[in-house]
Structure formats: C-alpha cells, structure tokens
Image 1: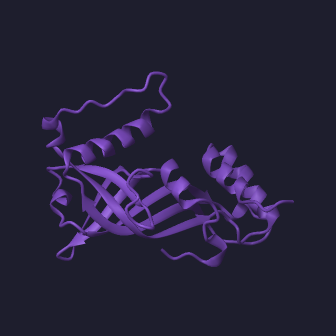
Image 2 (image 1 turned 60 degrees about the vertical axis):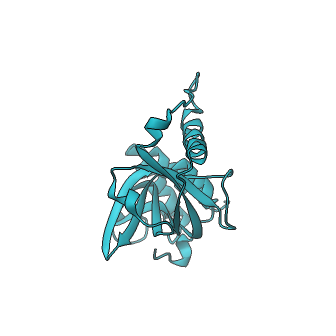
Length: 199
C-alpha cells in the first residue's frame, strides 16, 4: 500500500482491525487471485508468531479452503471513508477521498483439529456477541464443524494508513470535518478529529 509520510497510521493498527474486522482474505494460486469477505480478528489466545495472528474460517465448499497450508495471503480492512470536495477548503485544492485502511501480510495455517477450531469459533462468537444483553453461546456439533475450515494467519507485516487531510492546514481540516459531519458521515469526522494536532 502506498503511504506518503503524512498518512502513516498513528494509532494502534490491531485495535483498528478489531474495530473494522469484516475484512477481505486475498491470495493467488497458480496466478489466479481470489478474495473472500469475512470476519477476521487478532487473537490473543493463538499468537504463535512474534507478529501475532488473525483467526477466521471459510466454508469448506469455498475454493480457498483448498489452499495449501502456508499459503501467502493479504487481508484488507477498511475503516470510515468519504469524498472530500475542494470547495470546502480555504486554500485551493483538488477532489480527493479520505479513509483509513490496514493491510496484513501473512501465511495461512489450517486448524483442522476440532478442539482448536472450536476455540477459534468461540473467540469470534464471544467478540461479536459481547454487546448483547444475553450473549449467545456457541455449541457446534462436530458434524457442523465439518462444513468449515478454521484457520490462523501468522502475521509477517502490517501497514496502517490514515488519509485524513493531514497534509492540509488546520483551518482546512476543521472545515472538512464540519462538512463531512453535516453530510452524515460521523465516523469519518470523528476519525479526522482524533488526528487533529493539539491547538
């Protein structure tokens, strides 16, 4: 990912991934790229490597489930984003797009052991059920587990980009925040506000 120095992510990339965990699992076999959209989470329970790991699962019917163990992959995570009009600037400019994104490089490792697969499913479920008043608890029969392949991705690299008008004046940045918020994109406005330097 091309990241000019203004836009190098300053926050916690792993927290960003957890907050925007519906990602894309991308890889190539025999020169053919494929992509699956799915939840992927950093795992504290299965770190395995110094860089940590992501966990997830795919349907066994998905062609990606036939990838070899150790398959090189990229996972892409997108945060809030939106159009920026040059009419919002005090200084001259051009149309652009503000956004946050993280790219994770790594190697996919299949976890076909039923106990480990259950652990991965339990971690995913606990994370997404945490906001519920009565969280649903997984109780998957072995027959259901046969329909998926759980995996971990051993992380070898993380790139985090926050393109949030940091190359503009404070006056222009505040004007963009106001305009974006008026247009209903509160998440992007909040992300931009968090990146503003102290006055």
